[in-house]
Length: 468
Image (cartoon, rainbow, N blue to C red; front, side):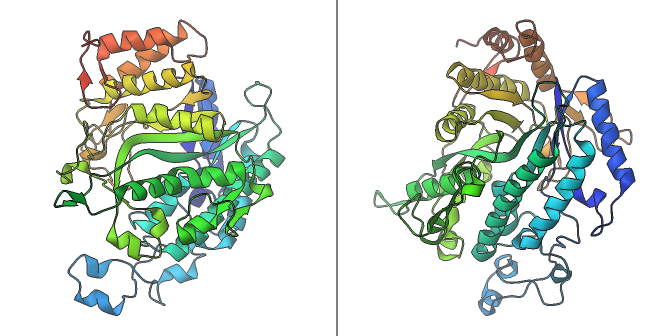
């Protein structure tokens, strides 16, 4: 392992507007220096979802539509409207829906980069701006600030996040003139983008005829979640026509805008990949102001017995290794930028599938490299079990290469078989090339030693039986 990714917590550095905590900054400097001391290149995320409370205080109470009172629970409590007028939310900047947040973010970026440029070359501006920040916070309501299918807010947030990334890219390029790792390039700036392999859910039928258009819903979901943001920060496209009319990439529309100052604002694309999702046509989505999300994904496939699927992890996510290959090749074809796989892992509290998952997915990485993809790095999510936003510390949310027993006061780390497989592939690859670029022979040996998954995730391939 030769790289390690951490996030800088904005709220620690600037707990109040224009009030900076120098001790917190020194703490991060020490962490980064320790990485270098141990042969690890630091990969720094400037914003990984969270915001200072003065930027965004999540709403605690919402006003209700009159018709909500006749709905059964929990529908009557879904936040369809604004927070109540007295909610502390209104005293904050209201997060990414306010363009002033972009201005404050760039000031924060300027401060951090100026202080850390001697130690850092790899910068990630935003962590998962579409799938987590936008969809999680303004469409599903699972993440702060907790709005549900709020199309108007989502449009503002999406635009402002694009601006935040573009301006951060420009600011880092302006400030970071120090080549920390000696490769001749002082900065490499990207974002992490959670992408999913998307398939239409099995259609509902009456008298043998499909009554739902899941194909169109899946294509729209794919376009919004996977393509929209990258089209903006690479091609300069803002497809307002799609957001308003669901016409994908109609370049003749007045609502299809080209921003020349948005073009080519990534040095690499940080690809986060975990699973395939099945998307269905949702009546609630299609009647909302956020119909541009396309449809609704089945989040936990253990709760839907009608949808055929492959092997699932502890969160009901389908394990689909080939999806990583297909997304890498899609990026190569549509955007042609270097790819840094910044997150890839599985929730596996019993360490039943982690080794096979790693082997199978790194096999897909090697497959893509063989076909010309420019992969500049791979980071597993995560180094150790941690606090997962939606899952907290519950056992089903364990993604770590090292397991932690949270009931043990010492929080001792336990090496998983997945970590052993990862270490094995790295060492075998380093025997062939000094940079540890994943090699064919390393994958073959790992399959024999640890097993793998079939490309489509439908079967586990046992150790020493990888040809069966």
